[in-house]
Image (cartoon, rainbow, N blue to C red; front, side):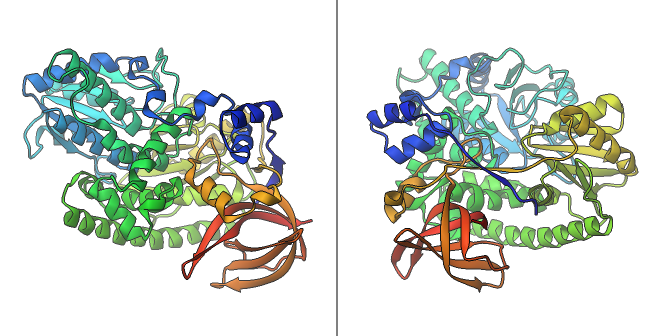
Length: 568
């Protein structure tokens, strides 16, 4: 494991005072200012503070097309991605469109058969869909790269509206409309909407269009805020940057969940995960619900995840959530074996030199390689790609990166330097997917290594653990831990990590792999846990930690969760 360099985020005292004067708790004010949130207006989490849909390029044009299609009784088909963002986006589209009178069904590509996105093969499946050939396809969380797929749809007499958030390539598909904050020329202030956020905005724009046409009274139509739980889940699970607008969307979704107002599928997922909706946090969405929905797309078929999120039958939802939970357990055991194999292969090859990591095994499961890449990236702190066989003559790769390396740009550079080497690729700065020919990995590895070195000018990278410095002793309590847990933290708006020196008054191993500590600072004694740490520690420590609540026998106490520690 690469040891991080510890830093402290600066927080401007005047900006802190401004937020505190606006009624923000002094600790929250300090944490928010350190994350760039200095304007009291950006603290607002009510719907009226949300960015208006009108800023999204073509969203109103697409709303007009959808309203026309509803009026004409046209048959629509949602084509979704097979991850949690895609599943929640599909559920938002189905629930929203059906509530507004559309005849609509869905199709989710199978990871193992057709691969990602609206491809010509998926158009073929759409033409043979059990509900009949659609007149209009609406993509959610995919489509921006589907140049051939949109062309194939047109040849089959099917119109296409693309809603997506992924970065566009050199060519855009010739769809009737493209709604994507990341397309060239779109001035929407938040480039970080997830796929589910984009389709939620599209539903808001469609309702506004139907109001304009007199279908609904000026403030009538379906209550789309009822979909906020789905928007929150997809946004957190896709690990998009939680800018002010995304935090607002997630806050609204969590508020509904905590108040007990959620889809039956969301309620059922909380139940099988053993989490309490009344105390729902972003952590629950990202680490308890998200992986269970994702498991369907990784090992089986995402239709199960979508069905769970779209049923109104509580018993049915619970049965499906249990099935998702079982698939997720299977995913965990497959991932553990693959991760151990990957680490063993790196040990054998002594392959730890270099700026990148590429691993492959003939026996690996292509639905789980992204998770293996993620674990290796954390361990070695380098952009990592993991590959598995796909069909007769291809390898499917999934990658995770570090803040210093834009992964999609690195793959783009490889494809330009070595035309034809990568058959297909797409993604973001921190995560991407690609397809290679079965025998092309030996040529790809040095090309990828060279691309990363060329883009960054570096061959090694150092992880940095940003902390919030010392926690004022008066705030090291259960009440503060509860307040922090109520907030929305995540990608680009990291959960608080404090940095203090402690004396170790006791230490013991629990579950053979976690270190339970008794720490003392000043006159305060704290229970602490360091997950995944089996070795003992010296008696004086500098500790980077999260403030957490621990519930035991109905008693709630404060617990420190150790992120990193070193001799003081």
